[in-house]
Image (cartoon, rainbow, N blue to C red; front, side, top):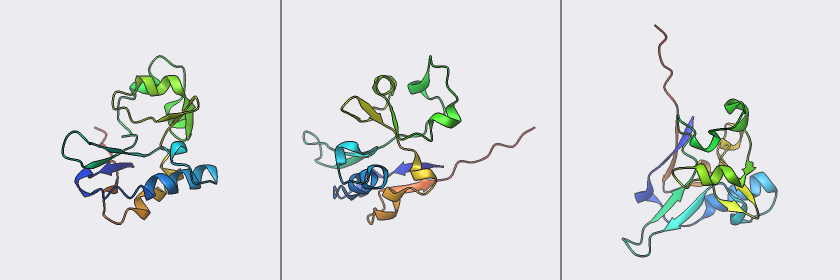
Length: 129
């Protein structure tokens, strides 16, 4: 499962940032959120949710001796991993990188996104030959 972003639907309300930080830290602090809303002031003015894409090739973990299945369950990571993310989807605050752990399988940001800019995408299981 991962979060699919439909940036054209984002209203820029930033409730997703607030609920993410509240769920994970117990306080509303968008700086401590794994999702960020980026505004394109020089282009079309649209807002775009930026969140971990759950990509197949996790460049953020390259060169580390870690078990990927365990690391993806963690909300905070070392900031060095953010530097390796090719999508810029690991926000950093006070030395910690914030990684979307899908709220343990029940992403709160998706639940509060009334415009539908954030949706759950279930991964397709590959058939074994």
